[in-house]
Length: 198
Image 1 (cartoon, rainbow, N blue to C red):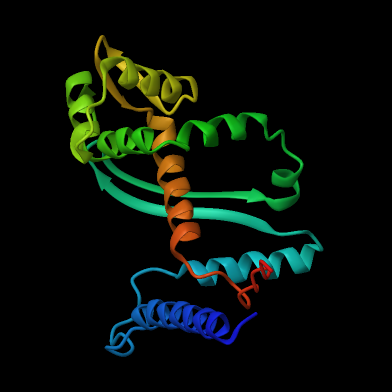
Image 2: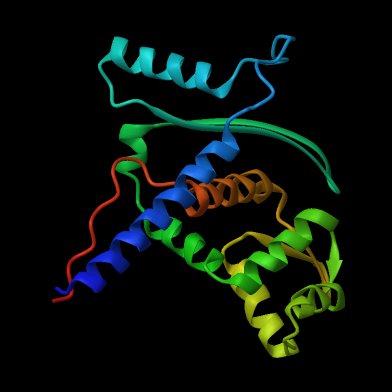
Protein backbone atom coordinates (compact mmCIF):
# COMPACT_ATOMS: atom_id res chain seq x y z
CA UNK A 1 0.00 0.00 0.00
CA UNK A 2 1.49 3.34 -0.93
CA UNK A 3 1.98 6.18 1.53
CA UNK A 4 -0.67 8.49 0.00
CA UNK A 5 -3.37 5.80 0.26
CA UNK A 6 -2.49 5.12 3.93
CA UNK A 7 -2.71 8.86 4.73
CA UNK A 8 -6.10 9.11 3.00
CA UNK A 9 -7.42 6.09 4.93
CA UNK A 10 -6.13 7.57 8.20
CA UNK A 11 -7.76 10.92 7.42
CA UNK A 12 -11.06 9.18 6.62
CA UNK A 13 -10.92 7.20 9.88
CA UNK A 14 -10.09 10.37 11.82
CA UNK A 15 -13.01 12.22 10.22
CA UNK A 16 -15.37 9.36 11.12
CA UNK A 17 -14.14 9.39 14.74
CA UNK A 18 -14.62 13.16 14.93
CA UNK A 19 -18.21 12.78 13.67
CA UNK A 20 -18.89 10.09 16.29
CA UNK A 21 -17.45 12.22 19.09
CA UNK A 22 -19.51 15.23 17.97
CA UNK A 23 -22.69 13.08 18.04
CA UNK A 24 -21.88 11.84 21.54
CA UNK A 25 -21.03 15.33 22.79
CA UNK A 26 -24.30 16.70 21.41
CA UNK A 27 -26.15 14.23 23.65
CA UNK A 28 -24.45 15.41 26.85
CA UNK A 29 -26.57 17.77 28.90
CA UNK A 30 -24.45 20.93 29.00
CA UNK A 31 -26.89 22.78 31.25
CA UNK A 32 -26.15 20.58 34.24
CA UNK A 33 -28.32 18.42 36.43
CA UNK A 34 -31.99 19.18 36.80
CA UNK A 35 -32.87 21.08 39.97
CA UNK A 36 -36.19 19.34 40.47
CA UNK A 37 -36.72 15.61 40.89
CA UNK A 38 -38.05 13.65 37.91
CA UNK A 39 -41.83 13.37 37.73
CA UNK A 40 -41.76 9.59 37.38
CA UNK A 41 -39.24 6.78 37.85
CA UNK A 42 -36.75 6.48 35.01
CA UNK A 43 -36.77 3.57 32.62
CA UNK A 44 -33.24 2.79 33.76
CA UNK A 45 -34.55 2.22 37.28
CA UNK A 46 -37.24 -0.10 35.92
CA UNK A 47 -34.63 -1.99 33.87
CA UNK A 48 -32.42 -2.32 36.97
CA UNK A 49 -35.36 -3.83 38.86
CA UNK A 50 -35.94 -6.27 35.97
CA UNK A 51 -32.28 -7.33 36.08
CA UNK A 52 -32.37 -7.75 39.85
CA UNK A 53 -35.51 -9.91 39.56
CA UNK A 54 -33.91 -12.03 36.80
CA UNK A 55 -30.85 -12.67 38.97
CA UNK A 56 -33.03 -13.48 41.97
CA UNK A 57 -35.12 -15.97 39.99
CA UNK A 58 -32.15 -17.26 37.93
CA UNK A 59 -33.88 -16.39 34.65
CA UNK A 60 -32.70 -14.77 31.42
CA UNK A 61 -34.51 -11.52 32.09
CA UNK A 62 -37.30 -9.36 30.78
CA UNK A 63 -37.69 -7.02 27.83
CA UNK A 64 -40.15 -4.18 28.20
CA UNK A 65 -41.33 -0.96 26.69
CA UNK A 66 -43.33 1.98 27.98
CA UNK A 67 -44.54 5.33 26.75
CA UNK A 68 -47.11 8.09 26.78
CA UNK A 69 -48.59 9.96 23.81
CA UNK A 70 -51.19 12.62 23.07
CA UNK A 71 -52.36 11.97 19.53
CA UNK A 72 -55.39 12.54 17.31
CA UNK A 73 -57.05 9.45 18.80
CA UNK A 74 -56.58 10.66 22.38
CA UNK A 75 -54.11 10.08 25.17
CA UNK A 76 -52.35 6.75 25.51
CA UNK A 77 -50.19 5.22 28.22
CA UNK A 78 -48.50 1.87 27.86
CA UNK A 79 -46.23 -0.51 29.70
CA UNK A 80 -45.55 -4.00 28.36
CA UNK A 81 -43.11 -6.70 29.41
CA UNK A 82 -42.08 -10.06 27.95
CA UNK A 83 -40.01 -12.77 29.58
CA UNK A 84 -36.87 -13.09 27.48
CA UNK A 85 -37.00 -16.91 27.46
CA UNK A 86 -40.55 -16.85 26.04
CA UNK A 87 -39.67 -14.16 23.52
CA UNK A 88 -36.66 -16.09 22.21
CA UNK A 89 -38.63 -19.34 21.85
CA UNK A 90 -41.65 -17.72 20.15
CA UNK A 91 -42.78 -18.35 16.56
CA UNK A 92 -41.11 -15.54 14.58
CA UNK A 93 -43.05 -16.00 11.30
CA UNK A 94 -45.78 -13.46 12.17
CA UNK A 95 -43.10 -11.07 13.45
CA UNK A 96 -41.23 -11.30 10.13
CA UNK A 97 -44.44 -10.49 8.24
CA UNK A 98 -45.01 -7.34 10.31
CA UNK A 99 -41.40 -6.19 10.03
CA UNK A 100 -41.48 -6.82 6.29
CA UNK A 101 -44.59 -4.66 5.96
CA UNK A 102 -42.75 -1.86 7.79
CA UNK A 103 -39.65 -2.13 5.59
CA UNK A 104 -40.78 0.46 3.06
CA UNK A 105 -40.43 4.26 3.15
CA UNK A 106 -43.89 4.87 1.61
CA UNK A 107 -45.51 2.58 4.19
CA UNK A 108 -43.70 4.34 7.02
CA UNK A 109 -44.88 7.67 5.59
CA UNK A 110 -48.46 6.36 5.52
CA UNK A 111 -48.21 5.18 9.14
CA UNK A 112 -46.73 8.52 10.22
CA UNK A 113 -49.60 10.38 8.57
CA UNK A 114 -52.17 8.13 10.26
CA UNK A 115 -50.47 8.57 13.65
CA UNK A 116 -50.42 12.37 13.24
CA UNK A 117 -53.92 12.87 11.85
CA UNK A 118 -55.90 9.84 12.95
CA UNK A 119 -58.41 8.92 10.28
CA UNK A 120 -57.43 9.80 6.68
CA UNK A 121 -58.98 9.44 3.27
CA UNK A 122 -57.19 7.81 0.35
CA UNK A 123 -56.70 11.29 -1.13
CA UNK A 124 -55.04 12.53 2.09
CA UNK A 125 -52.73 9.53 2.11
CA UNK A 126 -51.91 9.88 -1.59
CA UNK A 127 -50.99 13.53 -0.94
CA UNK A 128 -48.76 12.56 1.99
CA UNK A 129 -46.73 10.29 -0.32
CA UNK A 130 -46.18 13.03 -2.88
CA UNK A 131 -44.03 15.18 -0.58
CA UNK A 132 -40.69 14.08 -2.02
CA UNK A 133 -41.50 15.30 -5.51
CA UNK A 134 -42.33 11.86 -6.87
CA UNK A 135 -45.87 11.06 -7.89
CA UNK A 136 -47.41 7.95 -6.38
CA UNK A 137 -50.07 6.23 -8.43
CA UNK A 138 -53.30 5.08 -6.86
CA UNK A 139 -52.22 1.51 -7.65
CA UNK A 140 -49.01 1.98 -5.65
CA UNK A 141 -50.96 3.56 -2.79
CA UNK A 142 -53.42 0.67 -2.60
CA UNK A 143 -50.56 -1.85 -2.80
CA UNK A 144 -49.01 -0.27 0.33
CA UNK A 145 -52.38 0.04 2.10
CA UNK A 146 -53.14 -3.65 1.44
CA UNK A 147 -49.75 -4.68 2.87
CA UNK A 148 -50.38 -2.63 6.03
CA UNK A 149 -53.90 -4.05 6.33
CA UNK A 150 -52.63 -7.62 5.90
CA UNK A 151 -50.21 -7.00 8.77
CA UNK A 152 -53.19 -5.70 10.83
CA UNK A 153 -51.48 -2.33 11.32
CA UNK A 154 -54.25 -0.25 9.73
CA UNK A 155 -57.98 -0.67 9.29
CA UNK A 156 -60.40 0.60 6.67
CA UNK A 157 -63.32 2.30 8.42
CA UNK A 158 -65.31 3.02 5.28
CA UNK A 159 -64.54 2.89 1.60
CA UNK A 160 -61.48 5.08 1.05
CA UNK A 161 -61.03 5.93 4.77
CA UNK A 162 -58.21 4.46 6.87
CA UNK A 163 -56.83 4.66 10.39
CA UNK A 164 -54.10 3.03 12.42
CA UNK A 165 -55.48 -0.10 14.06
CA UNK A 166 -56.12 0.81 17.71
CA UNK A 167 -54.38 -2.35 18.98
CA UNK A 168 -51.30 -1.50 16.85
CA UNK A 169 -50.74 2.15 17.82
CA UNK A 170 -48.49 1.53 20.81
CA UNK A 171 -46.50 -1.28 19.23
CA UNK A 172 -45.93 0.63 15.98
CA UNK A 173 -44.64 3.67 17.89
CA UNK A 174 -42.35 1.42 19.96
CA UNK A 175 -40.98 -0.37 16.88
CA UNK A 176 -40.34 2.97 15.18
CA UNK A 177 -38.57 4.35 18.27
CA UNK A 178 -36.37 1.25 18.55
CA UNK A 179 -35.55 1.32 14.81
CA UNK A 180 -34.75 5.04 15.07
CA UNK A 181 -32.29 4.27 17.87
CA UNK A 182 -30.72 1.43 15.87
CA UNK A 183 -30.27 3.74 12.87
CA UNK A 184 -28.94 6.74 14.79
CA UNK A 185 -27.09 5.58 17.89
CA UNK A 186 -23.38 5.00 17.57
CA UNK A 187 -22.47 1.32 17.70
CA UNK A 188 -21.50 -0.13 21.06
CA UNK A 189 -17.94 -1.30 21.46
CA UNK A 190 -14.90 -0.52 19.39
CA UNK A 191 -15.42 0.08 15.68
CA UNK A 192 -14.38 -2.90 13.61
CA UNK A 193 -11.66 -2.48 11.04
CA UNK A 194 -12.80 -2.94 7.49
CA UNK A 195 -10.96 -5.58 5.47
CA UNK A 196 -8.09 -4.23 3.43
CA UNK A 197 -9.04 -4.44 -0.30
CA UNK A 198 -5.51 -5.29 -1.52
